Amino acid sequence: MPKKKTALTIEERLQQALVPAEEQPYKVPENWVWVRLESVASWGSGGTPSRKHEEYYNGDILWIKTGELNNGWIYDTEEKITDEGLKKSSAKLFPPYSVLIAMYGATIGKVAILGVPATTNQACACAVCNQSLLYMYLFYYCISQKNVFIEKGKGGAQPNISQIILKQHPIPLPPLSEQQRIVERIEELFAKLDEAKERLQEVADSFAVRKAAILHKAFTGELTKQWRRENGVSDESWEEKTLQDVCSMKITDGTHKTPVYCDSEKGVKFLSAKDITAEKICWDNIKYIVPELHEELYKRLAPQVDDVLLAKNGTTGVAAIVETDDIFDIYVTLAVLRPEKSIIYPLYLLKVVNSPLCKEQFAQHLTGIGVPNLHLRDIKEVLIPLPTIPEQHEIVRLIDDLLARERSAQQATEQALASIDLMKKSILARAFRGELGTNKASEASALELLKQVLAEN
Image (cartoon, rainbow, N blue to C red; front, top):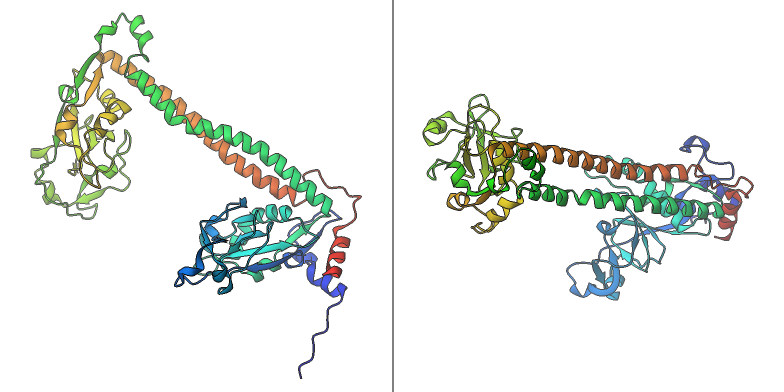
């Protein structure tokens, strides 16, 4: 008969729980101890009831997938299972305040905490803290360890960690009262950062509104009202014209052959609607066509410097200006708007075509199912405001200046938002080193608490 295993003494269990000095990630205060996660929480994972049995689903029991782990509280789930599904699978019901960690794939290291009883799939590890560990302390610590978990999960086709890895993972354990102070301090600092982030996000989200307001003022005359006054230009000098009045328009012949692509060394640059961004042509990923298809280019149309290329489908209504005299060809998804320079400044044409004023008119004439399309006849009839040429130049200058300032402010806001996330990471790193100013050296060591809990369990 096999020998019965002898129960471990408290000292032996303590040695298993403590992390040897050479494996400790960093120094912590004297009354803290480094322990393994398995010594301060019981661990489990879930399961997925068979999809072949409809009766296992659409019940009342919450069933969590890793995609729902949100670094916050969970009170509801996308899917729910039945009592039968719970009994006939490896799913388990975990109590409120369980801490969940994603073990597999793209969500590895994401964390959540249960606000209500729930089950999980097998990709979630669930920790139920014992009396030596506060669940909120574990929750924040696991958030701080995301990158470490990801690193430990490398090596396979997709990253994953196991319960074995989690159980052996080290955690700095302070006295219970210090754990509570750390949690309170983290939440106090996070609340201030969240308030700042909310205000910054409002500023970032309002960029599009501010840009639209600038363009509205530009093309209603408000932006240059003072300029007209200073230069003796009448408000009555503004006219309303169609695009056809101010530029010639061309598109490739509808019978133009389907492009045959080739290497850049042998071919001719070839643009389509996907290469048109707001105001600029993106040359980064253009294709090249065989020269034979390009031979008739100058008989059909030849894009020139200051031509405005307008996307007729795909990125419909987006326009860019030609800034190079390189020879290139274009696909039928683009229209060429060639400004009559005695009437309209090319950059003014570009700005107004890309403004909400024209986009709203384009939107009214979209046709086609799936991929919207603009017909040249409708583009020609789009109405635009037309001030004098000098005022057009001033409008372009003011738009560029104001939008440059807005973009600068936008970038500064985005940098500030990113810095808030970095500050949160820094707070967590300091919290679990005892560097938030909350530790009281006079408090009894967490080692005594650990011994007591091990003795009781």
